[in-house]
Length: 440
Image 1 (cartoon, rainbow, N blue to C red):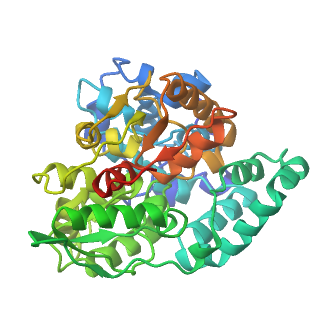
Image 2: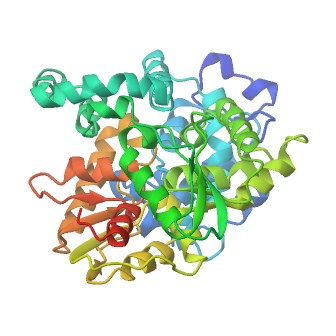
């Protein structure tokens, strides 16, 4: 196994341990031992489908995790490549009959890779730029008028013809969301009272990208919660929950943002989120901060009170009547909702409760669309193959529209629909229309 070609600086192992992993939270050997290498994960693994290599499957990566513990092993560029190719979709967790906790293993491994298998300068700069921009709502708001103008003038097409040969640039241009200039100034009210008698209060996490580029979805979500009888508090700080960083192995920043989130929402009994990736990360705070004696219990309590909005609404009786919404809707399972959070039934039930809405199921629902946090920016070619596959399966249902509960998924699918002009809605947008008696 070619895992011993590390850089000279790593010749004695990570931080002097003599192995590929340093002493700070290496992948858990007991969790590694749970894998019996049965192969049930292979048909559901998107990276295995694209690269067709054993080391690009969950069981192959678990072997690499174990090898990394062996004396004399190093975190090499080749090892980094195989872990980078993992989307972190957690479809293997759903498929595994042995209950292997690959989700915890990959979250422990990625920071080890970042610390012990240094990236080329170009990669480091590109990744740093992603986090410096997309996790800062203020910076995104400053961009909104520029994006709106360039879309009106058709500048993106001109840039594609000039710069589209660079995969990362092509991905950025293809995935740029449709933006209106008002995104620079639109804000959610910090408190929205319940319509009618209040039956409780919830905190709503606005997100970083979500609040700027998908502010209409946030507004719809708040209206739905209010219509169902909840006072909704939407704090504007912190700027980001840290999930994007967590899922990419940028552990120190993820931990600091997690602590800020826990502090900001400590007075609320329930924290509602409408972004699958954010909800997944927030529910993982307990694992992220498990070794911190000051924050471990607080993180555990925070994770326990975090709910996806569909999950939360399904736990309470419906109050607001639904009006007919005659649409054939293909439901897309966001991986961080369906696999990481195991929330699959609840959004479907909410949509099926809308009169005259027909819910359609695409083939291969469990296979990732290729968005996966920053994956479609740092692994654009593999992501594009998965995006085309997912878009084709959704279109093949004959639907009038697509429902997707994650902004990254919505952008990824839209970029690969081609000439098939299908609108993509968050389930809360459709539910909001049904409650208000309007049409999308």
